[in-house]
Image (cartoon, rainbow, N blue to C red):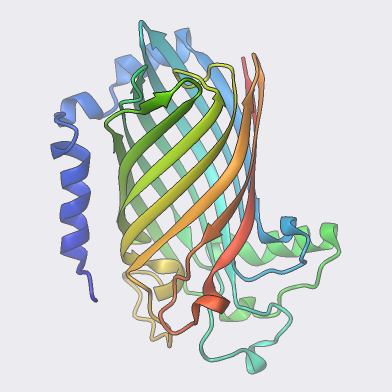
Amino acid sequence: MMISKNTVHTVFAFMLISASGLTFAQVLPDWQEWQKVSSQGKSEWMVEVENDSLLLKRDDRFYTAGDHLSRRFMLQSGTQVVEYGWRLGQDLYTGSDIKLPPAQMPVIDHPYAAWLYGGVWREQTDATGRSWKIGLDIGCLGPCAAGEKSQEVLHKILRQPQAQGWSTQLKNEAGVVLSGSYSPGKMLPWTGVEFRPLVKGRFGNIFTDAGVEAELRAGNLNLLPGQQASYAFLRTELKWVGYNATVQGGYFRNQTLPVHIRHRGGEVELGYRWQGAQWGINASVVRRMNEIREITDATGNQNFVRLQFAYQN
């Protein structure tokens, strides 16, 4: 079933404003607030690595790598934390067999693509788990994202085969993506276990989608972001996709491609998080649903590892 971009946009706006009962003034960043949070709050650096090769199968395909650096500033006031942050990221996508040169690549396959971006966000969370977040990413899709060089260097370090199909990657396009999420709060069936629903969405010429997410946590839980914790978690997500430029090409580019997106998607993540007084680590395995209509689920479903390393001061 086709889901129009207008439908996804409507869902996006509804869930971020109507569902939360908030006004734009309460959600949008404020310069004076940012100065207060950054000067009086604590800060955290985070490095995140996502890679299918970390499953030790030496298998690179579809969403094959994501490298992200972020810094956030958190200020607690009573039972509420206000957070501002910035991020830099690069995501890489390849065909199903990186050893094949362009002449031998299947007609029906995931396009080679890279998305390089920087972004900022504001998030507000209270001790009940109620939260709302808004962010903006700006970057570029295509050769300008330096995906070929990045993967070449990584594969030399890992002693893995070099990808042969980067000459076919999607064309350059500048990208802007607005994102947001809202959670009504967490549910506590018993001590040490909680369930938290969330709605979220993205709107832009690289990604436009809307989704629902649920996370189950068990262990020594933190009430607010940045607090010490140690717990296992299971996260599930279902989403409705209006546009995905890493499959379809840039929104403003007229590229004729033999593959089309699936308008329904999602993923499941199982992992463990530990946060100490200063250091923190998150390790998980993600199962992502097939994103391409012409590819079977047996081929298109994908697993990768997500590792996060954090330092607070």
